[in-house]
Length: 268
Length: 260
Image (cartoon, rainbow over all chains, first blue to last red; front, side):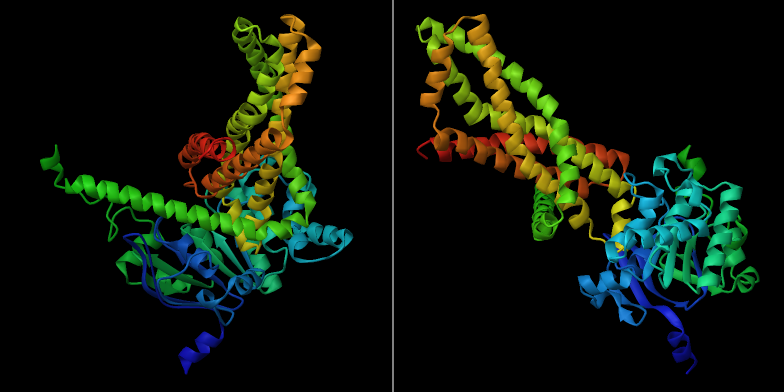
């Protein structure tokens, strides 16, 4: 009964997910739920498959086993037009921003609106300026991506991701490589957008402090499995050595400092 | 021995897999053709970057190739007292062979490599993934307009190359070396056949444009999304395109002009 309730309030339900690239197993029977209207963080060390998980949810990759259900639809059972219809309800903020370099800020944000609606240009202008105002870059509308700082590019990408008022946004490493001010701005924006518009947010990150500050629920991944989950407070108090090592950034622990190798003295 | 055989087997599998991906890529591109043709604005922008920006290198190269043909042709033909047929020789060489082939090689180096690098970098900077996640098909919006622009541009560029080449030949043959101008043009006019020479040259350049643009776009789309991957893909574009142009030129020439 409780499990049913959990599933009903989930926007994304992943069950027994397995995925491998050539010989390397990325996910091994992983299950998780993304709740409606919440900020869910997927955390784990680099190379643990966090970005791959977002691509699987977005249907850019197909799992070898298990199921991914987004808004009641099994992702790998959708045909192309159904998948594209579902993607219109998802936004994704890429690590690099993924802005189209031949378009300026305004046209980048207007791009999905122009592609998917037949709105007159005057309304598109109003919508774009509203989105840019939300991320604080209305004054930068004429700039091109190569004229933006990393933080600004990510904010423009965020404005583009919310252009079609999606039900869910996936953030791929939103804080990586940001200066403290840009990071603070992004943290605030993600939280504000989630709360004010009622979005469902999935943040993939390994920036523990920033992510834990805004996440409602956190999954910690390693070696293709979920090795810890809970609210940020629950994870801070977790007894798991692995979770403790990750949450507190300890250099040695279950994840060894040294890459697997022969005896040091034998090797010298 | 087993290692050797397994290496060969692996290479064959990799090559066949890549060929299959290339064929599927072409099929997807061709499927979008009709809808892209209905949006000429998408193609016109690409016609500029793929076609118009290539005109300069085509024009200059055509001029020099024509001038060299004029010089070489004059020295050989004058041994037989047949200088007046210089116009025919230049025009036939250019329209049948050098126009389509050399302009296609230049096109591969200038526009093809640029297409590969552009698409490869769009992939490396996640712009293509970004479009997919915005429910916009990158094959339709990015690849197909460039493909059509390449196919439209190539015959026109080859025509410009041949035309400028003939003018270059005339400059050297008639203006500098003193071949009779009337004979130069009239012999050319009477000997060059529209269907056998010009149309066959146009068909060749259409085929080369199709193949070079396909290779360029596929190599970019299939590139490993790193700076080294894009660099290698760009190199492969020029190498594969050059082989494809020269190999197909032999086949097409044999079919059009030979008795094979």
